[in-house]
Image (cartoon, rainbow over all chains, first blue to last red):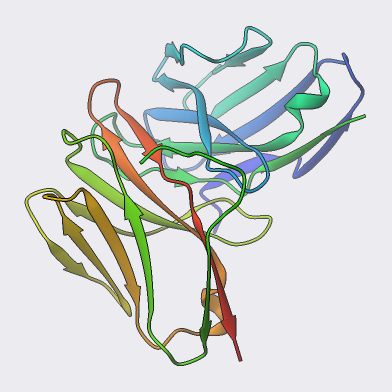
Length: 113
Length: 112
């Protein structure tokens, strides 16, 4: 049974056209993360929510935003996608911010035309 | 560890052999380490973890070794199977800021 669900699995958008990626979880975890992963690279943390508290990484571009309307859902908004934003976007959850295991979703592959 | 470069190290093993995947980390203050397996087109999957007060931990067919003196972590997979083919990432937990720092990743290929 899926615990971290991402939709859609594949997303194609046009250069500059806003896009929203979705993540939901059935684990009732407090923390939800968004990572960007480019080909042959490790996941790179963009930001996370601890409950409703948002924590942005210092090097995350302003083009990337996130919303968490409730415990179960978290969204990644890319306001004006560029060609360099084509990547796999991974959502993860954990119970807390300490050494709790992070559980990843299957990812959304974003293509920018 | 810190992710650098665009070319993943690769390891090719024969089915049934043991595999050893290595990882170096840079933050001497890290106290929690995790190995993730990522199959093509999927998200990372937790394999095993170890805390800094241990130097060895065993799971099903997997063993993680931690050498804090040289800041080195290894993952040993016994009797490697074709289903083990994937990219393996080590990650260490950076307590200030509460985030994982992923290493570069190693691509394991299992030959039948």
